[in-house]
Image 1 (cartoon, rainbow, N blue to C red):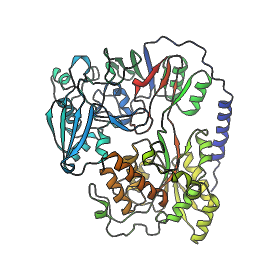
Image 2: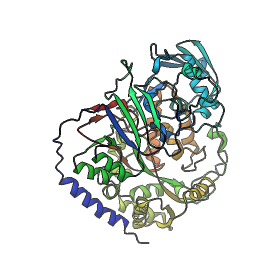
Image 3: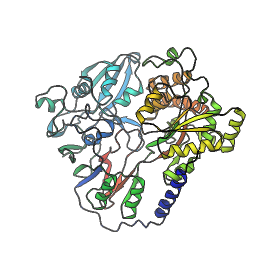
Image 4: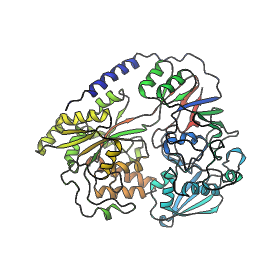
Length: 552
């Protein structure tokens, strides 16, 4: 098997890096006095709607996100959960109740009054009933909440059906989609009804965010304006915000250079071109995307059962593919040692990425990060082709694996795996067919490239937890049990310690192969936008925190 894409990509990256090195980034023009900041975004992938909780998916939230807030917020620098419309929350009655204490004095737009518990119930009910909302909030509510009890205007008790988990808190947070708090009075003033979905030529239901809705032109844009009072959390710096829909990357670049938009997100090569022509690149505060290789094939014979402890599901210990190489820790280790991450970084990310020592743990979150993962990285999991060859030689038998040709990076990884002695079959197929075969447990020794920007602990589930439907995990019932205990622990300090202890197991046992971390980059007109604070990680919406766009 021969590939030349890594060499070709490396050459291209070399030209890009050379161009970057030679740039003289000078921004001599004076700041432009503009009251409206225009954000160039791609059009909503699943269409437009004025109901953020029911008819807008996670990646399309930006079309209404600036005007809404949630019970639980996300810190714009650290991505950690923080109080938002709820000042605090606590579990009671042995985990059977979850009580939210709401922030007093928060105003809805357009004089629709103070936000209270009735608005929270209205908003979450709209996401939940009738079933069929695009977001997962409705399902999460139906699975976890028996009823919502209004104690007083600022106290709301959720009566919990079973064991509450972090997934529930994530689902109603600012980082997820479908749980924005809207004005009940606004909707009732229009006649009410369910679902609470204004038409596209009508205003969206009033929210509490730093920007309020002005108008939507379907297929073109949504316009917001700064609220006419001091916002309780953050005053926006621009009087108006326009989210302008521009589908093509090159067209967004042209609009930026022409001064038609002031901030956008475009691929790295176009961002470098923009910087060479006077624009400025701003990175998120954290690496928003984390990349790794999933090792699929070490499956139990039992199928998953939602909401049933893994120890009660995987009881036989028998495997679908008893000879799967991914059930062997040493062969998983050889796969990790085979990968030259720096070469991948140079070839595909212009050397701008960081090598990831863990996939779903962030070193910036020091309370759950073990420094030994850094100090032991080179000798345990880092690039060591001779060590990988030795493991395969000692194994004594040929090791046949498959690599899903998902992209050029996957094919480059396949070259590296073959170079150390794996017998590699590169598999090309439609994504839907691949997913079907993986979920049917048909693959015995598959490697799949994957990435995430989700909250770390709940994001681990699709790639590391056996008792669910994605079938990406190396299935070990002991690991599942540890994970189940973590997601049920709502005390932040205890959860961080448990997550760190679980990380020790994942690191030692090579549950998957971490690769790289990259920062999300925004390109701005430096005469209009002087800064943008956005964590990048743990957010479903890539264009959130627009109130933190700084005006020059």
